[in-house]
Length: 444
Image (cartoon, rainbow, N blue to C red; front, side):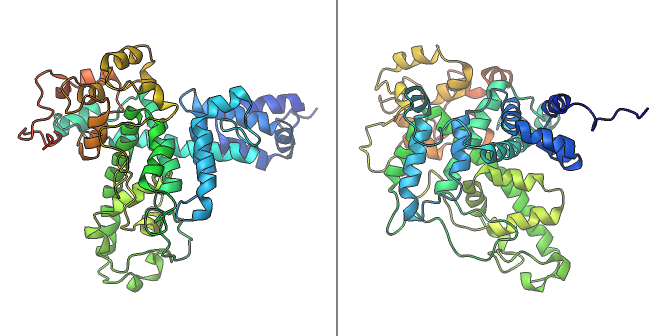
């Protein structure tokens, strides 16, 4: 009698086995190797892939943000023909709950994959998000008051809480949406050479700075904008090291021009720089690469071979800055400076000057939806320059130096365990002469 095999099991058991697989890679390996499992996959692929998605999200991801991140691919704002599509996409994203509850959608729902292909794209993007999250836990920039060796040996890698994972994933997907629309143009290692840049803010603007702010950033709670900014700064931090590594490798060849490199070290056609030492002083390149979106960082981290990582850095290493607080769009250049405009769903936090009313609301929210205690300590103060809530953050936030160590991302318990000096009542947050280099300059 023949030995029973996995291939010979009933189709119901094939399906059960498919649902136990841990990830897409395992699924593809099995169905490509086995016609029987491929046939079983065809019977249940929609339900199977959606179960994978829910398992991988683990309740830590807002699917409306994730779907907007994949549907915004290619919708660069420099192309004025994309304007109405961008407005519709961002409007659906912010109103996703309302659209579902009232049945307002005539197309794909903003919080549900339209088809199997979108589900696969969501899974692939989340794999990159996980890579970035795991890398962040190992490479987080040192808080200024913790000694270097102590940080490296006693704190890293960080064991992230669910609240911290939610905040980082939220920032990941929103920064990716921003990059797809308003950031730098992403290029692959096999892209052709192009001078196209996403200059949506120059002559014949697609959007004004005010419009871009209201479409996207004004729909977020102010502390979620700071989460977004902290991840942006982390990407800059990571790219600085990668760019230095690539630059050193090119200089060490002894060649002056990239065209002189030996065949096995030749760079891709889409490379913008010409000289082997061009990256040595390329100060704006980390900001440009970060503006493309954090999925690019995940793609670079995913590459095991140095040349593959080098090539992804080279084709995206340009010096055009699309930082969200650059080019005059932080926070809303056309609005009166004594007004703060928050758009639904963030408008529930618009308490005018009623700081106690906001504090009462925050106390009712789960930790992942409220700000960190350090954000509150800095920006929710009775002695701010302006009585209007959030005005100080919007006025001075682009200049603050707390973002590099991720002040808005960390759990309250962690910030207390770190003995964060900013939590002390007498800490000179606004003291221009303070020794701490992260102190925000006091207003003139």
